[in-house]
Length: 227
Image (cartoon, rainbow, N blue to C red; front, side):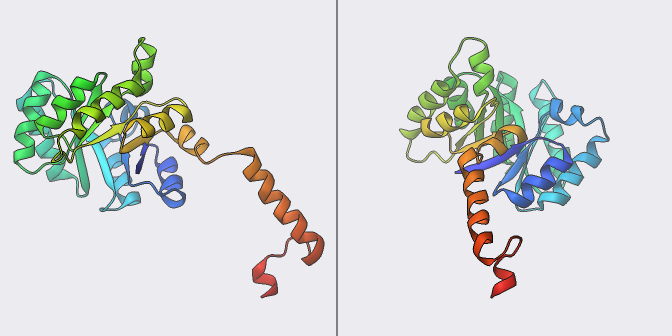
């Protein structure tokens, strides 16, 4: 199971990269624009934090295949890291994916709202396909079902190595249900990702351990003080 952080906020990336077992960071034009900084500086700063082994998913802006291919080439040439080029699933996007895959690019298909878009993207050469789970729910669809149906279809092909990368989450349940439905990876915002390990009884247990220990061995002391 792969967990990625969906943000371009450098402080958030520093925190989660240090404390959580994330395998990379995903961005899109909106996420980058929200930081209101120099684009190249933001991307390079992310790479400085996560290193060259963890994935960084960066999206193109071109609407036609020719522009998408040129933008992807420039990103790969300019940015040094484990880059995945995010391309929305459209007719021109699928065309660009097929060309770029033959050139050895890592590809993430994005903007996905249906299971068939996932399947087509996988056949076009995408390494990851990112369905928008919450966004599908917001327009009367069922984001988790999109994941489930696509996973069932892709599983029929034993040679398929493409992974479903669940995206667009507003709560922990959506993430959990997507994983159960077949998402091999998820990209999650900082607020939801932190909630994924939270439980009030966990905090209560830590406090209880500390309190009971302190009654015998002294408050504020730990193993470093007595061993």
